[in-house]
Image (cartoon, rainbow, N blue to C red; front, side):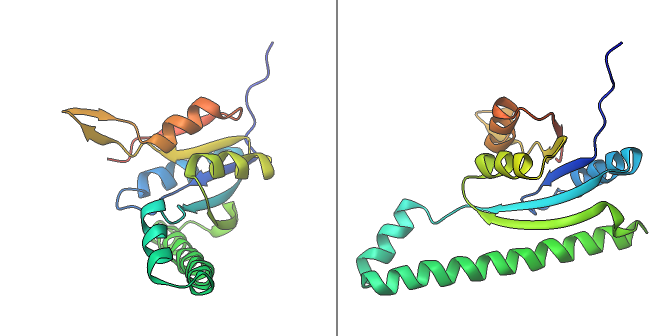
Length: 163
């Protein structure tokens, strides 16, 4: 008889958008049922090539590197505070202890790659993320991060509608 899945570490990835609460609540529910820990992750996309070109055009190379490095560090720190505040607010709202949330990570990179990298690094048994649909020519399509993670991850992915 095949064994049922046993989720001990859940990676919850969030973009901290306006409709993420149902996704976090699903991750919390699974964590409670399996007595699992949650690792929260937010990925900050790096500067686009167009913005980088503008910075490089108007600033010296040294100034551009400093702005990029210092600016990214500031963005990561700000997002970590937002992630912490969001988590505390959600846990307090539902009178849920923070025992399940073990770590909060904010990293820079391509979203789908960083989600899979973090899940592997932390030996996650499940990835939970929102569907983040967008409307293209009258049809809803799942967000690119959800599509890529579900396609390339070797770890089970639970995609929660968040619209």
